[in-house]
Amino acid sequence: MLLLLASCSYPVLRSDLLEKGIRDVSMVQMAQNPSLYEGKLFILGGSIVSTSLTETGSVVEAIHIPVDSKGYLRETEPATGRFLAFYVRELGILDPVVYQPGRRVTLAAELVEMRPGRIGEMDYTFPYFNVRQLYLWEEGQPRSYFPNTFFSIGIGVGGRW
Image: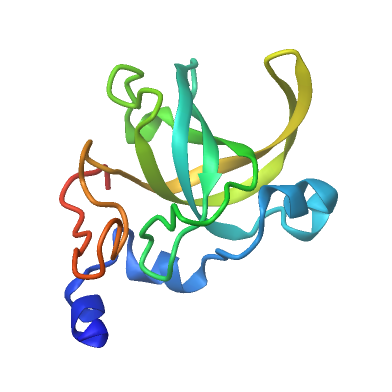
Protein backbone atom coordinates (compact mmCIF):
# COMPACT_ATOMS: atom_id res chain seq x y z
CA MET A 1 0.00 0.00 0.00
CA LEU A 2 2.80 2.40 0.92
CA LEU A 3 4.57 1.75 -2.40
CA LEU A 4 1.35 2.36 -4.29
CA LEU A 5 0.71 5.66 -2.50
CA ALA A 6 4.29 6.86 -3.01
CA SER A 7 4.15 6.03 -6.72
CA CYS A 8 1.04 8.22 -7.10
CA SER A 9 2.87 11.38 -6.14
CA TYR A 10 4.88 13.32 -8.64
CA PRO A 11 8.06 15.35 -8.27
CA VAL A 12 7.56 19.07 -7.64
CA LEU A 13 10.74 20.04 -9.52
CA ARG A 14 12.28 18.83 -12.76
CA SER A 15 13.57 15.28 -12.45
CA ASP A 16 17.04 16.13 -13.76
CA LEU A 17 17.49 18.71 -10.99
CA LEU A 18 16.17 16.35 -8.32
CA GLU A 19 18.59 13.65 -9.43
CA LYS A 20 21.64 15.96 -9.35
CA GLY A 21 20.70 18.05 -6.31
CA ILE A 22 22.07 17.48 -2.82
CA ARG A 23 19.43 17.24 -0.08
CA ASP A 24 21.21 15.97 3.00
CA VAL A 25 23.42 18.91 4.03
CA SER A 26 22.33 21.29 6.77
CA MET A 27 22.75 25.06 6.70
CA VAL A 28 25.10 24.68 9.68
CA GLN A 29 27.35 22.28 7.72
CA MET A 30 27.47 24.75 4.80
CA ALA A 31 28.43 27.60 7.10
CA GLN A 32 31.22 25.54 8.68
CA ASN A 33 32.85 24.61 5.37
CA PRO A 34 31.39 26.73 2.53
CA SER A 35 34.18 26.10 0.02
CA LEU A 36 33.22 22.42 -0.02
CA TYR A 37 29.68 23.29 -1.19
CA GLU A 38 30.02 26.42 -3.35
CA GLY A 39 28.84 25.89 -6.93
CA LYS A 40 26.94 22.72 -6.09
CA LEU A 41 23.24 22.21 -6.76
CA PHE A 42 20.94 21.76 -3.76
CA ILE A 43 17.30 20.83 -3.36
CA LEU A 44 15.90 22.86 -0.46
CA GLY A 45 12.60 23.33 1.24
CA GLY A 46 11.78 26.42 3.18
CA SER A 47 9.27 28.47 5.08
CA ILE A 48 9.46 32.05 3.84
CA VAL A 49 10.55 34.68 6.37
CA SER A 50 10.64 37.58 3.92
CA THR A 51 10.82 38.42 0.22
CA SER A 52 12.42 41.57 -1.15
CA LEU A 53 12.86 43.00 -4.64
CA THR A 54 16.15 44.40 -5.91
CA GLU A 55 17.20 45.92 -9.23
CA THR A 56 18.48 42.53 -10.40
CA GLY A 57 15.87 40.17 -8.97
CA SER A 58 14.06 38.85 -5.93
CA VAL A 59 15.59 37.60 -2.68
CA VAL A 60 13.76 35.16 -0.43
CA GLU A 61 14.88 34.56 3.14
CA ALA A 62 13.62 31.21 4.39
CA ILE A 63 13.91 28.80 7.27
CA HIS A 64 15.32 25.56 5.88
CA ILE A 65 13.00 22.52 5.78
CA PRO A 66 14.51 19.21 4.58
CA VAL A 67 12.94 17.59 1.51
CA ASP A 68 12.58 14.06 0.22
CA SER A 69 13.67 12.64 -3.13
CA LYS A 70 10.66 14.20 -4.94
CA GLY A 71 10.97 17.63 -3.33
CA TYR A 72 8.19 17.19 -0.77
CA LEU A 73 8.80 18.93 2.53
CA ARG A 74 9.73 16.75 5.48
CA GLU A 75 8.32 19.11 8.09
CA THR A 76 8.61 16.55 10.87
CA GLU A 77 12.39 16.97 10.75
CA PRO A 78 14.00 19.92 12.54
CA ALA A 79 14.96 23.06 10.63
CA THR A 80 18.72 23.49 10.24
CA GLY A 81 18.98 27.26 9.84
CA ARG A 82 18.09 29.96 7.35
CA PHE A 83 19.13 30.68 3.78
CA LEU A 84 18.79 33.38 1.12
CA ALA A 85 17.63 32.46 -2.39
CA PHE A 86 18.11 34.85 -5.33
CA TYR A 87 15.69 34.66 -8.28
CA VAL A 88 17.06 36.56 -11.29
CA ARG A 89 14.76 39.27 -12.67
CA GLU A 90 14.90 37.89 -16.23
CA LEU A 91 12.90 34.89 -14.98
CA GLY A 92 10.29 37.15 -13.39
CA ILE A 93 9.70 38.65 -9.99
CA LEU A 94 8.61 37.00 -6.79
CA ASP A 95 5.98 39.40 -5.53
CA PRO A 96 6.29 39.82 -1.73
CA VAL A 97 2.48 39.79 -1.45
CA VAL A 98 2.41 36.28 -2.92
CA TYR A 99 5.75 35.05 -1.52
CA GLN A 100 4.80 36.18 1.96
CA PRO A 101 5.98 35.01 5.38
CA GLY A 102 4.80 31.53 6.25
CA ARG A 103 4.37 30.28 2.66
CA ARG A 104 6.39 27.18 1.80
CA VAL A 105 8.73 26.65 -1.14
CA THR A 106 10.82 23.89 -2.65
CA LEU A 107 13.69 24.98 -4.85
CA ALA A 108 16.68 23.79 -6.81
CA ALA A 109 19.53 26.26 -6.39
CA GLU A 110 23.31 26.57 -6.56
CA LEU A 111 25.23 27.76 -3.54
CA VAL A 112 27.05 30.98 -4.46
CA GLU A 113 28.57 32.09 -1.17
CA MET A 114 28.00 32.73 2.50
CA ARG A 115 26.65 36.23 3.26
CA PRO A 116 26.73 38.02 6.59
CA GLY A 117 23.44 39.32 7.88
CA ARG A 118 21.31 39.58 10.96
CA ILE A 119 18.36 37.80 12.50
CA GLY A 120 16.93 40.36 14.87
CA GLU A 121 19.94 41.61 16.80
CA MET A 122 22.05 38.50 16.22
CA ASP A 123 24.76 38.27 13.56
CA TYR A 124 24.12 35.37 11.19
CA THR A 125 25.87 33.93 8.13
CA PHE A 126 23.38 32.98 5.43
CA PRO A 127 24.04 30.46 2.66
CA TYR A 128 23.20 32.46 -0.52
CA PHE A 129 21.80 30.52 -3.48
CA ASN A 130 20.97 31.26 -7.13
CA VAL A 131 17.60 29.65 -7.91
CA ARG A 132 17.33 27.38 -10.93
CA GLN A 133 13.72 26.30 -10.29
CA LEU A 134 11.20 27.24 -7.61
CA TYR A 135 7.92 25.67 -6.52
CA LEU A 136 5.55 27.67 -4.31
CA TRP A 137 3.24 25.45 -2.30
CA GLU A 138 -0.41 26.47 -2.30
CA GLU A 139 -1.72 27.63 1.04
CA GLY A 140 -3.42 24.75 2.84
CA GLN A 141 -1.98 22.26 0.33
CA PRO A 142 -0.45 19.09 1.77
CA ARG A 143 3.32 19.39 1.49
CA SER A 144 4.39 15.85 2.29
CA TYR A 145 3.29 12.33 1.50
CA PHE A 146 1.74 11.79 4.91
CA PRO A 147 1.34 15.16 6.63
CA ASN A 148 -1.26 14.20 9.23
CA THR A 149 -2.36 10.64 8.64
CA PHE A 150 -0.90 7.53 7.12
CA PHE A 151 -3.21 7.61 4.11
CA SER A 152 -3.11 11.26 3.03
CA ILE A 153 -1.09 12.05 -0.08
CA GLY A 154 0.44 15.43 -0.76
CA ILE A 155 -0.04 16.14 -4.44
CA GLY A 156 1.20 19.58 -5.42
CA VAL A 157 -0.76 21.54 -7.98
CA GLY A 158 0.45 25.11 -7.86
CA GLY A 159 3.77 26.74 -7.96
CA ARG A 160 6.24 28.54 -10.08
CA TRP A 161 8.16 26.59 -12.67
